[in-house]
Length: 454
Image (cartoon, rainbow, N blue to C red):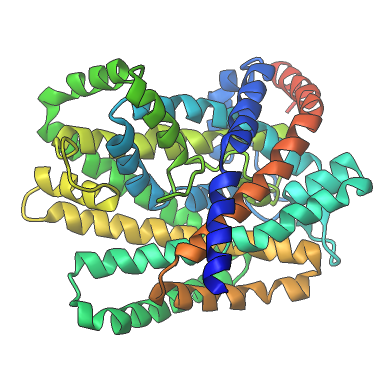
């Protein structure tokens, strides 16, 4: 019976991530990109000024600063998928896949601007009067109480979609592979690693959203800088190949195979069969974090959120792609995913330094994701019940880390994939309906900015 359920879930996961959802995500994102009139993109400098704290006010409602909210959201999206997913895209569709990832990033930036502006425009409150954000509150506060079933639909799917099963499993598997643990000791090693990871995660997430934001604010810059320096070193050592790499990406982008690969490059970012945008734009997770930002200006937070896909896809994913292409290992490589990225780093950097650095990056990437996803699940359960019951999600979360570390996750991953897809439906639908209100609010905000009213 379990095998039958497993097959059904696998079939549903494959079906739900088909053409209809791609049309909703990509088509909806493209509409928002055009509908925005590209106005938000003209204020990237202003977005960076907001991020640096120029407009922070202590008396504004919310829990996190603009910087902490963005760092926490990026901590969730910048994960091992940025290392393994890009390799899968190149292996499947060739270098041209990277071009389509860049295109998707710009569409994702528009989506993030709208969804996260709405998460501040239509914030809710828990029973203690604390400010809460996310698609479930956008739906109930923005569309009205009669739409609450759609909000419940999102939050219910979110309980499963934000479980840490994939991250915990892939982290332990990466450590097992890198340190070449003998097969007879796999179970014991995975169990001990799972318990260790769970303890570290528990120390952070039981401190609440402010501790998560604080830790993420410190981890994100470190992991991006370390990765940036490593890849720049690889590119410096292969500097003569860089012009040819960019030419290859653009020339290969429009061949038949690479168009297919481009779609995969956009979607297969968080692992095998995890067909989701690298920046999770439109899935509804980031608005839960950005909805907690300390601000009275929704457009301000939308502009900050817009930087997320730029950092996640245009920077981190591009770095991975350039390192792989510069190494040359992608040509005829027997395999993909993190094994290809490891091979690429080791092919250029001496004495297996590449493997060591990449392992450190994987650790930071994975832990940052594990810290942040707990808040998303807590937010969903709190919405469905109350804050007191919502806190119990952290215990389920910690137990899931240990279990996920020692079992094969085909069934669980398919289940999480399905839940993620279901989360996207109410998120994008509510955003498309409420998009005119964001546009009106944006016009007012940018007018005030021009007249120095802030």
